[in-house]
Image (tube, rainbow over the protein chains, first blue to last red):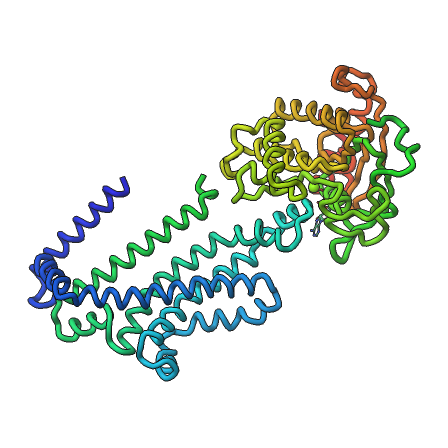
Length: 245
Length: 276
Ligand SMILES: Nc1ncnc2c1ncn2[C@@H]1O[C@H](COP(=O)(O)OP(=O)(O)OP(=O)(O)O)[C@@H](O)[C@H]1O
Ligand SMILES: [Mg+2]
């Protein structure tokens, strides 16, 4: 049922696109056929493939490191309350600062290459993971902790069996936010540093008004977004399977 | 089981409260002036209106909280959580991310891993939950959750079983069944039981002794030795003439507490008329 309605939405989208391409002033919206042909050209020339490889490497590395570091930092902040209370204001503040503001500084420190780009992705993605893990750990159910204490459980056992599993649903929400922000930052990084990857192609075709190619890149980015969020949804369904039943 | 006055003759009580008070913050203590001693194998019931400190007394016995004044002693020593006692909480407190079976094995860290699962399956059978051993608590009914919480405590085979309204969300049939099973079990294993309830009938049916409590501040106002025969399973105490008399007495006391306590939610309601 869901699959059917989703296909319906896609059909409507393509029809609207086709109509728009006919009625919009020339050169703004390419027809679906022209876009498909552009995709073929980009694919065969290897351009799309290289750009995809560049961008996914940066995105994957940045997001992976953010998930790892964010979970560890969030858990530490939640587990050691004084540390959490000392840091949380700053973490919230940093998370609210537009990450673009840091780009000149990052370029000065790390240059224009892969390291700088990965770091920009990391910086955006790590914040929601830290914050959500921290909230998840600090919101642990005190009644369940008391129950665990009544069975003689010590700190480690309580942490592993009560606090951590209780924080998982929060952590997953953090990861989903991180995936979205990470993808945005990938493109932003590629636009602001050495122009490469999908962000580079976006700039190239956008600035030269080659709209068919431009559309191919935009749709590739959307596709990555869809695949990653769906994968995380499956992960969530697995990790939090006790909830759905 | 020990009955009648036997508990006062046993030298080392299973549990002793000496002039215990507990305050959670500033202001009136939750319980105060508690002096009591429970003999090994005795089944005592705490009966009283909401807020009179029944749960507080159980938490003190489990060692989960410390008395503000006085001493709590378990077989002569201050209680340590997880040693000698197991508690059935008023709210079920099941771990939602563990299956029914794993909720029980979690409470058995003192057993070797292979034995944990065996023990969990035994006890799940005992409370009639074998079929849902692999189900998460979220998918269990209220009654099933309560039986699971009960099973978790029983599985630990504690010297002292602390039960906070363990049958409150069972239907009448399941409650009667579990009451009988509990009596059978405690007779067989000679466990000491501290049992909290709102229900006068349940108190009379299960207890060797009833502590009647009154709120604001929480205290014990009356201790009643129950004269019913030890073999309650074959001879229903409800047919005993004393049962009817004690039942009326306890009802009246509880009713007066609720209506005459200015702090009660029902203060002054229906003064003078009978509810029956
Ligand atoms: N953790 C706590 N912090 C502060 N006050 C508490 C706490 N636990 C209990 N109290 C207070 O202590 C008093 C006794 O509470 P307790 O839970 O022991 O009562 P109870 O007899 O078990 O009530 P009920 O029948 O409603 O479960 C109440 O006035 C309650 O508000
Ligand atoms: Mg209570």
